[in-house]
Amino acid sequence: MKITKEEKMYLERCGYGRKDFAQIQEATRRDKTTYEMDGAPITRDEAVTRLGRLDYLSGIARSAFHFTAMRITEDGKVILFDSSRLFGKE
Image 1 (spheres, rainbow, N blue to C red):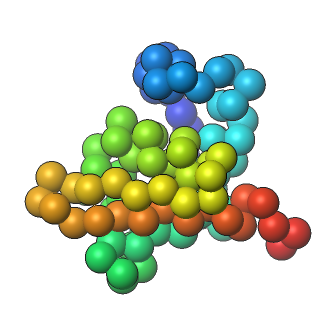
Image 2 (tube, helix red, strand yellow):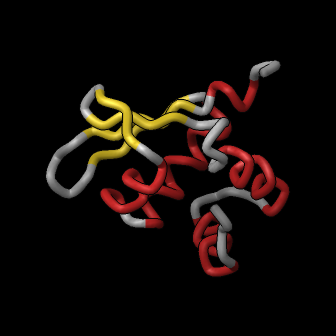
């Protein structure tokens, strides 16, 4: 998933620096982060659809540096981001 220039500006407003973008981008890879919604696995695309791109970016950015994050959809579903594979030797 490519992070756009506008999305990078959003991330900067959230407190992330340009040096953080590579790690955030890496976390968006399908083999680096898994997603669950209310305990059931979902795809990255479903997480983006349910949350919208900016809420998704907020969650993936946090997960990229803290192993996990969670965000709540508009209809109250919990989406868990698990980027622990980003830090492993797989």
